[in-house]
Length: 326
Image (cartoon, rainbow, N blue to C red; front, side, top):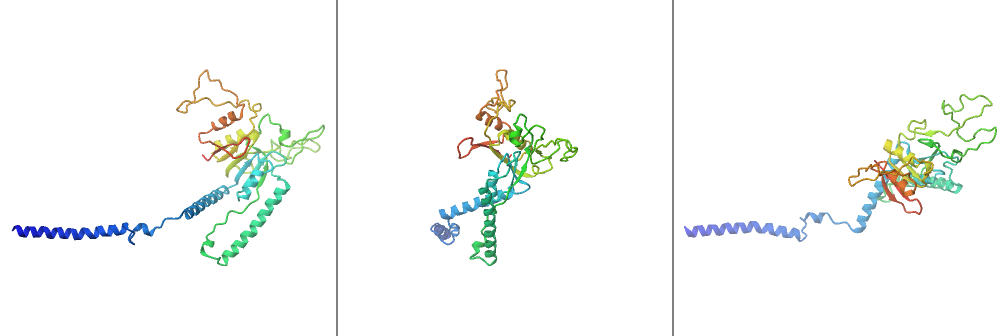
């Protein structure tokens, strides 16, 4: 009986060893790079390929952002003057509208206007050639997958005050108006403030009251309700109105403030100090001070909404940029 039992245990051990050995050998072969190894089917990308993939992702994100900005009425370039910010947007294929009460609104210098027209024409020819080449089959399959950047576009302009006509502003300077004895104010836009019907209600020989209109959420131009963003580079007196408007209607904005205008805006007060929990400390000792410096202005504007952030741009001068996407 003992002999039989020993022989049985030996057989069981031999059977276990034969079943375990293939498992160990197959595992070892996969570690050594056998064709059954799953990792061998997914080769690692080189640094160059990883860099190319990253660039492709960034390009796709950039194109998606441009497509979004071009929806609705596009970007509003407030207090844009001659339109240099809109020129930069136009060259990237982003449609925009300059809003400014000055006479030279959107009037780029001659060489810049010619440059933009030339770029638009050249790009149109290039796009037509590219489309023709793709329709002919192209050189290879990858060439057909290339996504062309948006073509440059022409920007628009609207001569108007943004949101409100600020009190205390030198209107004759901003609107380009001039007055003389027995003569009326002259500019390009004629609007009767009461009736809204242009020259309605004026008799022959009567002095004409000519006023630059307001661009608001309800104005006839219908630009602001469907705009995708507001940008403003050194918008002077309009800075506060731009931030207030964007915060109220939750419109993404980018503003680079410059001048403080403490005398024009004596009601701008520095925000109260806050404790560790970001709660304002309002005591009798805390006297609100008027915004009088550039840093005060930045602090005052940032305090308008908790989502507003500040970044520093790469140029000299007033280069702090306030932005929010809410």
